[in-house]
Amino acid sequence: MVLIKKFLLASILSASLISFSTADAKIILEDQGSFAIGGSTVKHSGTFSTENFLSPDGQYAYGDHLYTFYQIPVKAKKYPIIFQHGGAQSKRTWESTPDGRDGFQNLFLKKGFSVYLVDQPRIGEAGLSTQAAGDANPWAGNPLYADKTLFMLSRVGLYDGDTPQVFDNAAFPNDDESINQFQRSWTNYTGELDNDLNADSLAALFDRVGPSILFGHSMGGTVCWRTVFRTDNVKAIVAFEPGGTPFVFPEGEVPVAEKATFEPLGASAMAVPLEDFMKLTKIPIVLYYGDNIQKSETLVGPDKWYTELQMAKKFVETINRHGGQAELVELPKVGLKGNTHFLMADLNNVELANLVESWLKSKGLDKR
Image 1 (cartoon, rainbow, N blue to C red):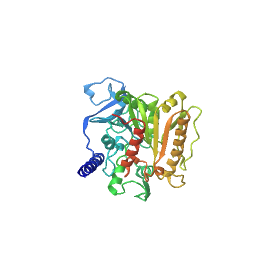
Image 2 (image 1 turned 90 degrees about the vertical axis):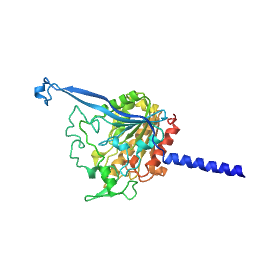
Image 3 (image 1 turned 60 degrees about the vertical axis):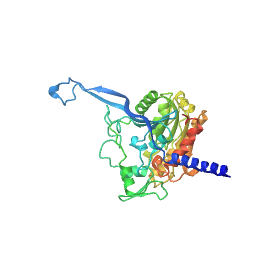
Image 4 (image 1 turned 45 degrees about the vertical axis):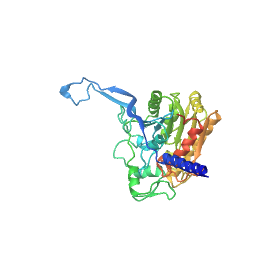
């Protein structure tokens, strides 16, 4: 009887320790740092002279590089995670949530993965550019008058005049300061948006870091697909609501896009050589989409993301038809409800991180 009690006590203590270490794990780092990779330089005409010290004559402009901040935990797992943000965002996407909880940076560090957070060229801490932004990009320059547009496109909710109204079923921290923090996370472009340049730089990062897992969000989706064409070091792609930039399909297989009620927001697709597309069939890929996605003549955000979801399904089907292993997960259908476009920062982001971790385990990508 005494032995049984000791065994039960030991089991309870062991379970408690496991629970504690999972929920409240401390981050112990072996290394951290940052660097730029890729980029170009352009020389201004003329000759530099100290007599005209502030003149651009004879000087070089540096720009078009990628910036990354990395953290490597003690006893890190074999494959790091490289985080690619979406449009008008930065590595801030993956950091602390608007209400101060752990974002995916910390959650996956605690799970034992090294993390590399990226600012793509010409934005954020990689803001130097050799090309002017031009007038074509509405997210370039300051002031950035877009709070209502971006709030609704992100499916957080609607606006009643100047008052934000979070959807009743949204897993978003619905308080004034969280909304304030969310609106202050947007990042303007300082140069032309060039997704091939972005993919070139991201591929260079993969070649420096070595085999790694690629996480992408929103407009970063097309950067993820194109990066695979440029390096063999992408072991898997985890995409969170990719869209807003073209999905890729083999030449001759580009599907007709579903039209959005506000047509400029509709999903898009582009053709790539079959040889390139086939590289996407060699790695596991999973796409996650959240809630409040529906065809609508009045709700611009839900309607826009309905068209993206339909294109994403065609993308996954095409990969698998060519022998790949792509999956698409609609989170409400697996019991994770209320997610906005920024699902990695919603109130249920721990559950989402656990779901992703399970997927990585199923693909053998969580080993040390």
